[in-house]
Image 1 (cartoon, helix red, strand yellow):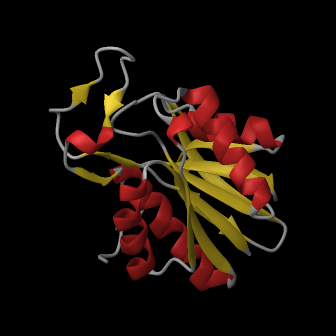
Image 2: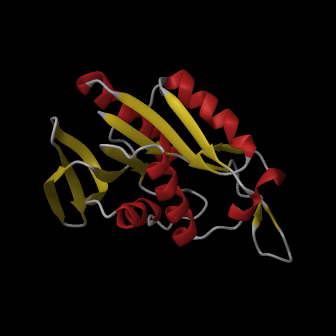
Length: 188
């Protein structure tokens, strides 16, 4: 099974500098960390690889300082890591971020399963994962709280949608976004 995990480096605190001309966050002006939700995505991928075999590739879009996050992903067990970096990406919104990541996934040869964290702590839109799936024209499930079953052709997931719990079986290739607390991320 070929799994790609999309991850993002986010500000470690609430104090960030904003460029007054562009309105974009100055990412190099503050301490950073791996988006917490993405750690659950990576752990989910690593657990699936242990069960099904295959590879886990971590993909991010950001400045070169994201290399430290990718090194942590390697020490947690990722097989490969790719950073998409260009000054033109600065200040990207959901549409441009999801399009860029989808193109990166295509260049990498696609995946059976793409896993994203539910959202990022700096944007909180929870839209990048589903938008990637839309660009790739593949099925997706958001807010996954548990992986019920997995086989060579599909994955079954549980989603808590307000007052409703839904279980869906999704054929590959597909994308899921995972909630926190669905597993305990291992330490680097």
